[in-house]
Image 1: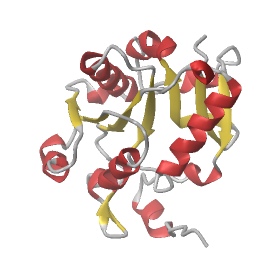
Image 2: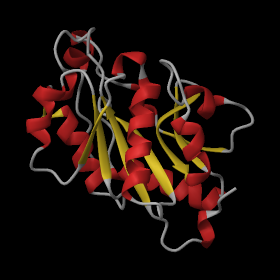
Image 3: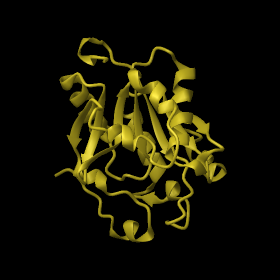
Image 4: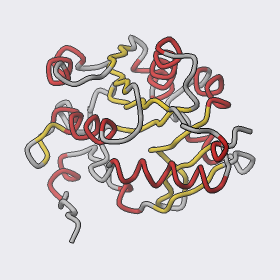
Length: 207
């Protein structure tokens, strides 16, 4: 098991999953305007405000529409033709892109593009949880389970690159044998999948 308490600095990249077809939303949710910015841009800017580098955005469905929105941001784009398989295909594409970029990375942050509460502060909390626990995974916990965003050390790169199916890393994160440091983040339970989700969204501003 990797113990990042002894590593200085801990170098990790970020993979933002944005390949889905948004069928329940009826239009590409990656491009939904939230407080003046597209949802995908909000997610990327949160990652860019953290120590993560590089940032990989995985596209699939709607890639031609989304690419121009990201053109001025310092990110790597990974397109997966297998996006319809589910989240696992995006994880494989993103982590493989990171490995090709650098073999010296110590870990990867996996995040979704559709959680409005995702932020650089959330990333900082995951880093702190992993550092203090010495565990090889730190993950958001809400609704009684571990979920994305999650920070994995390089010990898990091979497992992430061999995932299949729609559930992505869910089983890995919630396997009782997995070394997960949980971070209670109930605000991340909201993701924007439907027009009703969007209509009910209310921004949370620090007081």
